[in-house]
Length: 292
Image (cartoon, rainbow, N blue to C red):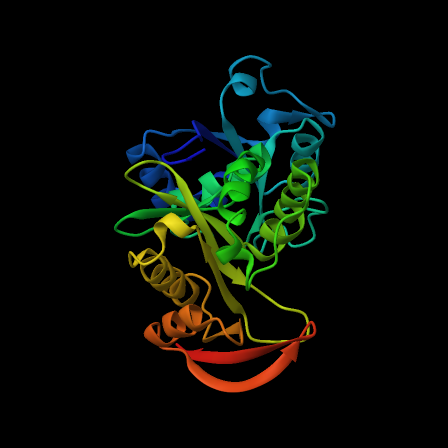
């Protein structure tokens, strides 16, 4: 299941006055360039006597995102199960956006990708994270589970890595919870790696925060058929760059079980330096650190 391109078709800006529209001008130009329609409405035109008065037709059929600085409108949109992005500014700091998952405070130059990502979160679609020369990296979804079992069935993969649940139904439930509690909260996590050439899922890689440690951790698992081809290094380099430039992380660590020489070698090639050996969950691990 590979998601590229844009699912978002239209963005509605429902604002209290024309003045607060100005910071979005650059973003709107970019939305138009990407073929995403835009409509600007005054809140008083879209909300009357505590009820939304948007037409029931095209707004419901389009893949639409609603951006508003009006707390009551945001609440009504949420109750109508629309994808809503709040906008807090100096003139509405007292507006209530309780329960609204995404709220902008500095909208100048907001990239099209951000509007798309907010829409995808509401729609239950995985975010595209990055691409390398040969791979796409995106959020995992339930449909990936079958491919994960094919990868993890190899003893060489699970020798140093925790396996999956015995039954697929449990693994799917875990993925659903991971999307809701990890991706939605941290906006990073362990992602799915897809080979561009074939569309095959070849592994998992990404970032996590392990209990008891402050430094984020880089993790990676690649299926046996795709090992030894430089793909793990290529993808991990992309993730390190993403962690530094997009997430503004300054350090990453890896925790590798003693004996896993292939992972130690990869970590060295990525620039990680050994810091210590320590016991994690009853097994001896090597902790390596990367300063970015």
